[in-house]
Length: 123
Image (cartoon, rainbow, N blue to C red; front, side, top):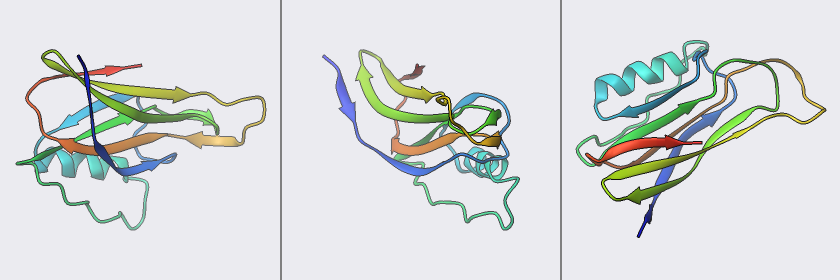
């Protein structure tokens, strides 16, 4: 039987300094600082780093990569605890016929209870 886990969105946006598609599991402050700086490398001033208690929590992040128009989105919709692993359910959205022109880099950062289980990102 699978259990759903709670999570809190740290930040979700359409513009970041992260140009390539990627998934992240962050379990320490140094890696969190680095990911936050990369995410906001195009922002002035850079927003303050949100506090995460890495003794009890971890950060999960999904990045869609750079797209050449608006309407693209990525989000973590659910966390499902399975036998020996944690599934991160990821939803990607593509634009319809009407979309803005311009570069976008959608992302979603969450925090949830720390686990040592294998983490699988599922699309």
